[in-house]
Image (tube, rainbow, N blue to C red; front, side, top):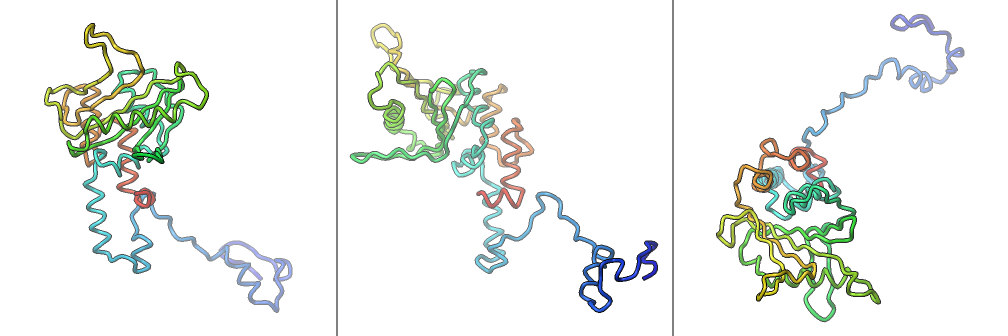
Length: 263
C-alpha cells in the first residue's frame, strides 16, 4: 500500500482489510485522518438544553442568569445549594457561630421535613448532627416577621421529638440548636448574635435542658471571623468572599454550566 504521511503500510491483506471491502478500509484509515474536536474549557457556558429544545427563549434564560448572578447566601435557595453535599461549609458556619473549633459534623440534611399528623409540620433548611449526637438547624431569614420567637420554639420542639427514640430515658436527649441568620439586626443592639437559653429568673442560673436558640445578626460588619462570614452571606460576587469553601462552591453554581443545573 506504500507510504502514508511517512508511515509505511503493508498491503490490504497485511493490514487485515479485504481489498474488496472499502468500508473496512475506511475504518482502518480513520485513526490516521480523524482529529477529535477540541475540548471546551471546563466551566465554559453553553446554552441550556431547554433553550436548544425550545422550552425557554434565550431572553428568559438571560433573565434567569441575571437573577442567579444577584443571589446571595442570604437567599435560602442559594444557601441550600451551597451546603448540599458540602460538609466543610456546614462545619465552617457552625464553628464560627458557636465559636467551637472542635465541632465535627457527622451528618446533615438539606430541606429536612418534620411531619406532625395532629399539628403543624415544618421543613428546615439545614439540619446537622455532630459526633456527640447534638443537632443544629441553620436557617436564613430576610423578613423580620419570619423570625418570630414562637416559630423557633416550634422548630426546637419538633427536632426534640425525633431525637429521642421510643423507650429511651429523657436524660439521653442531646442538645439542639436553632440558628436563625437574619438579614437585619432584629434586636437592634449591634451584637453579632443573640444566644437564648432557659434560665432561673431568680438566680440567673441556666436550666441546662440543652435547648439553644440563636439569632445571628446578618448585618454585622465587624473585622473578625464572624464579620467576614456575614459579609460572605451578603456578597453576590464569589471573588470578593473571604472563605474559600463558600466562594468556590458559589463560583461553581453561578459560573459553571453544570453548577447552573443544580440551581
